[in-house]
Figure 1 (cartoon, rainbow over the protein chains, first blue to last red):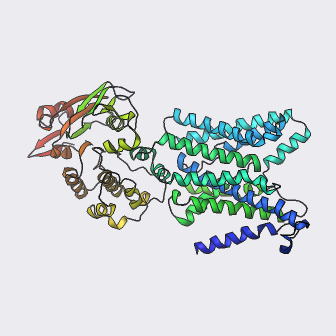
Figure 2: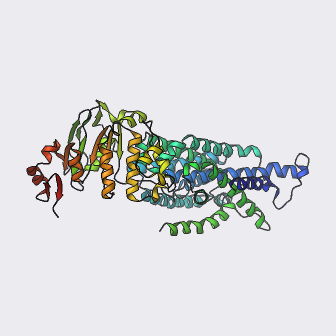
Figure 3: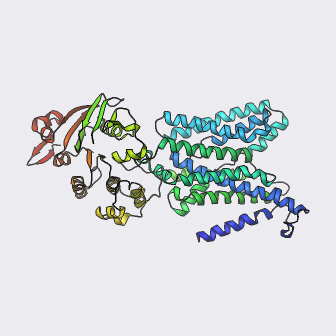
Length: 312
Length: 231
């Protein structure tokens, strides 16, 4: 059954680039002189690749944050990492560093992680409630800072920021998908490398410590790894909410296994989720695409509330 | 191996000086909130400190792998975040310095049938046994047990007593409120009061009537080799 779903999903991903407002003839794919060729290789395929790896990074990043902070609500989004990244990108747009969007997005994410991390160790333990509150406070702060940037920006910059915050997997040219592809695969390899340590940290930090894990070091490496990947992802796609929250929960509920055994499925289904969401977003609107971030937040919001209710 | 704490203080403990000789087992007693668990956490390195030495080497300078050889701490309550980690998986994470298979340990404690059950769904008594099993599998030179009989029925308490008495562990440090357990084990006793060590001597000296009156008022008596609490 599981393999069946895997294979079905692979087929969905494979055919996804063929669907859109303009249909593509499969026979034209190897004929560079056709419009279909350009449409497929330069627009549709990069889009699917970006959607897949963005979803994969967000889902796996969510899982890692939940495991390390030991709270089902902590993800790079709820703790403000993505807002930090968004702010960095907006800063780059307003102050004329348009060519360095990724770098600023990444720096924003990293800054947030440093803040969270310093506070965590100041508190001496992972007081996850305090940390979530810090995340909320940071989100307010970043939002205010974003408003200042809006205030300072001209009309076209404002539009650029707004469009960015809606989230999009529009990327033209296959070569531009390389950073996010590497970020995704790199994050997957990193988490697989630390599988044993993650499993120990999934019990408790004390237990992991007593069994010989260098808790602080492993936490630092993994959180920075996630932030780099999320930073690269957000600077490319804008904030796409709730993937990191929904996918780990759904996959865990289906598989009923400990988190460290689910890294590959969560990576895969995170990717699949965004590919399908993008497919819907592209084909739903009659005249133009619905921004994908809006779609996932629509699905994610109610689910988040459901999760909170279930925990009570 | 020799275990020392020299001049340690924090908000709960106050100027702790303490030395355990090779193979010396220990019982730690003390009222609620006196600082017993904090003491254990300092000793095991969970609360990092420069004041703890093992064979004259500072505990916090040891690398993570060799540290596991020296010391292990079994908390009073099982703490586990992931809701799907099974008993068997949990035990295997602790197989460090032993040749024993986790399934033998499960058989020995008669909890084999719970093997594939998530730890979070075990009863508190079962969790207690699971933690004791991890202590055997870890096989550190010193194991600190924090109230190992707290959640157990009388029969299981007895099983745990024989487990603690057995040669499955190397050095044991046992924190407990169970005076009967402390008395029957017969190890040297540390009594912690208001964050300081107020008694550190042999079992015989601790369990004499005058001393018991000093620490417990008239509420604890020894009659016919049974420690009784007068309610």
